[in-house]
Length: 335
Ligand code: AQP
Image (cartoon, rainbow, N blue to C red; front, top):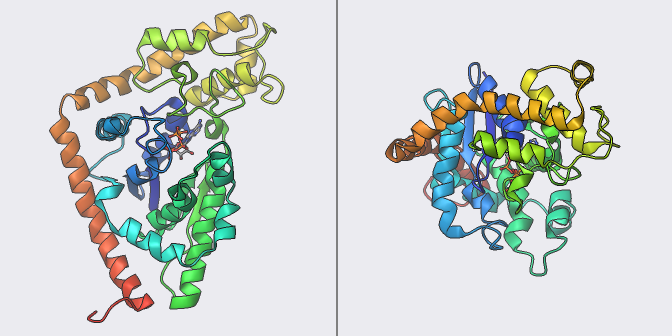
């Protein structure tokens, strides 16, 4: 089996973009692979909490909420390792070592850094090192496969570059992680209020996303208010009709049917009627997951124990890698 690394920021409640674009894939992979899933709280303070976009007092609650959401979606804490990034210090220790192997211009060229720092006056240096920490999250486990969305491609390329650089300088240590690309529609579920942007946990307008815990009324309201255009026909043309195409895309990832087949099936409906159908399907699909999440949220001590046990299992792997790394770079006198 492959060792597969995944991570998610506790910046809010899991939304259907996270679920269909990432989490569902991890769950499908967990039967035949070793899944290591980290709730990346250190990543989440690089921007959302540090820039006061989110209230840092809510972070502990968001960590437990994310834990409940992941378990409720079907992540199995016995088979897989689910833990909190900040509880396993070797992630940040390796991040430092890797940061010494790359350059300021290379990190400044990272598209996500350029995009996210664009409108910020005082750019936090944590944002600059974000992809190096992500590389450490992967390499500390000597991961062989990383499932990512298209938006993460460059970060993964940096992780591979750093693995090669470390191996060349200090001797063969890290396998080169391979991307498992989810190139389907789910890798780009869009913001319901602005279909040119992706759906995001931390986007200020709550109407822009369907959270996995949304009530039937919330789901119906959000889908009804989703931005579409003046054409009443339902078609799938993401470039010219991003709003309605996003709804077809959501319908398609839920049912596993192609957008063309769905458009043909609903050709008697206008977009208003189609919205009600999509809302209904979403409500039914999320119901069993919501039942699980609600039960899990009633038992906080269980959620804490899952994270604690996960950190113990993760640390067994990371401390071995870290001992080797320290030895190889020469930062030791007794090893
Ligand atoms: N809209 C999306 N469609 C498909 N996949 C998505 N992912 C995120 N948004 C979409 C995938 O979810 C995983 C976890 O994401 P993350 O928490 O590490 O950070 P993110 O990509 O920045 O997610 P958000 O929801 O947009 O959070 P915030 O608002 O905090 O930035 C990733 O695998 C991602 O590809």
